[in-house]
Length: 232
Image 1 (tube, helix red, strand yellow):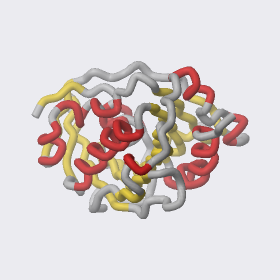
Image 2: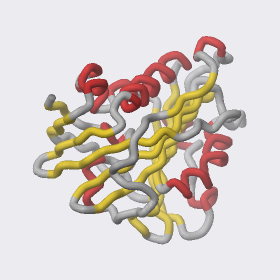
Image 3: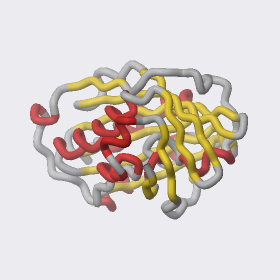
């Protein structure tokens, strides 16, 4: 299946097309298998909340003052629109190009930021915030994670670059927000493995996605959620 990739598989972490430039991280291998984990209560059981604007979401992103010394914000990169083939993932194929392009998450209200720690390309943490009706957010992120659940291993071909993908189920962070998803993704290309942890939390009308080095995701998840869902 040929599709167009935009924020794409960027949802599955830092961006497929930037992977060959990343350094290896020895916390996993391409043989890792499994999928995403999801926990929480149905969207219909949540409190009703008015969606936030993109400008409001932008103010709720983490910044250098929240992260501490050693962090630098990376300039926002333009969306990629390269032809990509997804091989060996029936679940993604069934969802069609929308899944491969993050189509279910192209909510108009969104804000994003990526930071590096001490300048290391394998020490990045990326934050995405989306806002919409709770049910829409739940469906959008749930479809992507559910598709990956059915694909513990598959391959993405972008131009002449073949990227082996693997996912490992992680316990969802119970007690945070209304719904939670978490997984560990391994990107393998050019003889190098890059391991990225991704955790998504929906709290009312706000969806937070943190991706990056597992240690950095764990370190900053709580403060990111607190700032994203602050009432003042």
